Length: 366
Image: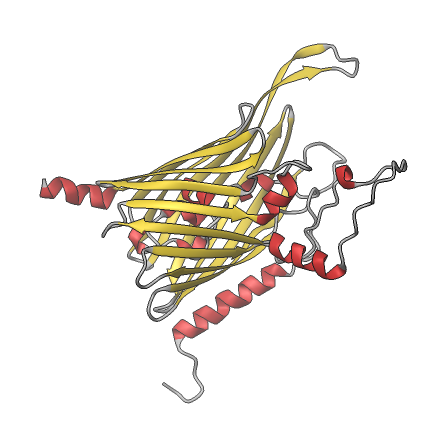
């Protein structure tokens, strides 16, 4: 190799990193409540739900996690099919179905899938409250993605999504891009990930004159560690790094103008506010992997932001806590996860994963 030349694997790695950094420039300054197509950030697998909402760093054979990081698509998922469905409240539900395949000609993994969200049925009424009938609302994302091994430790991936949102007779559509990169340590126990989700543009608005919405951009960094002598994997996700201030001032916390002699609560110091804001960016997850082939997987998760924003004032709450289980039954893996959102209850996520290659092997052996 000529002196000063960069190996092809390192060149590809550098190109992917530059692409991520370039796309991230459009992410800075985004604010919550102003973004369209937010549904694409919902977890696409029961495993992700159980781990606090996302898992972007642990490179495994779980195709369901690719929705969080396209670079997690790897050859162990070849010929895999998944179907995931999440039951929310009041008739609201979302789900994901997809298929992944390895293409030898380009030495890359490709996949395609559909992510949907159904808001249920609403009552239509005029400005006087007279019922006019019913209407529905739904969101849809059609996805296609590719991942490629950059070198023995790094993988890069991209997913393109056509998204459409329908609210009664109002419809909006757009195109979104997710890009990710993973890195694993030499011993394979530590995994790192950098992901930029939700960049793109809205090419049709809900109605004439409606402002063009900002994209649901989310810059994330993930870390996962599999303990060497204990069947346990720890995961930490840092999300919304493109918009640092995630604090929300609830009007329920404001003090009225009447003073009945009680002491007003002390305002948080700048340091306390900074610490609280820091932890709002973090999600923690853990998995106990039981059995030689991980036949049973027990999962726990905690999302501090959800806990702070969804808890009821002056009441203890488990909001933000999540848990779940995965069971490997022959060639089928069944996952279940739930997350507590508020006092009313929790979402319940069910998933089925099938590797058709493994299924064929079972039949041949039998």
